[in-house]
Image (cartoon, rainbow, N blue to C red):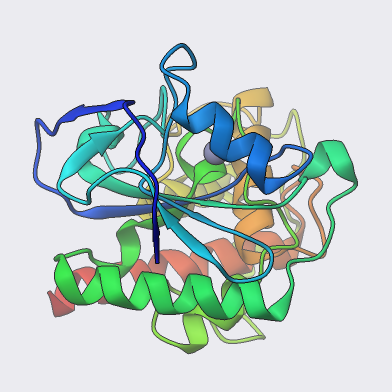
Length: 247
Ligand SMILES: [Zn+2]
């Protein structure tokens, strides 16, 4: 662990109970580090993980780093106050979504496991930046290996095949109304996303569906509620509910 100081933090206003993962979305690690250490940038994170697996600590875990921005999850809004943020060095969508090297992911996993051993962070509160700000953010992106993290106890992951129930059978497309759209909304809300509970399949819902797909159905990021997406959203909602009951 390499200690580098960022001045961009203040005191938490709420108890720490979330973990937020990001990609840096810049040309390289040093540029991201420089930005997060610049007092004029007003951004930071607790950690940055380089492509070669080196971990930089910028802000102490008990302080409030400035990484989540305007965001929402399960009814909470000041997510900087509640979360630890990890920036993972990766060019992101702007640089053609390069793959995350294995050595980098191994370092992310070890770092997350340490954090989860120190703080009471429920599985359903381990999120992507895109989960908590679907209309603004796409990181860490659909190439981030969430399943590999879940295999080591970091975050929820449903079985490969999600059961298809009769109400899901036609899927839900933009402009649709009815039980499949309502069921999809309920499922996404149950996972923690900010969605209106009624109405037609509009652009805000499509943005949430894209965020869901980046996280749990990364082969198909369309913003459309095809049958597999609806079934998978329902499966993750059920896992979320089960994880809540276990606490
Ligand atoms: Zn981010």
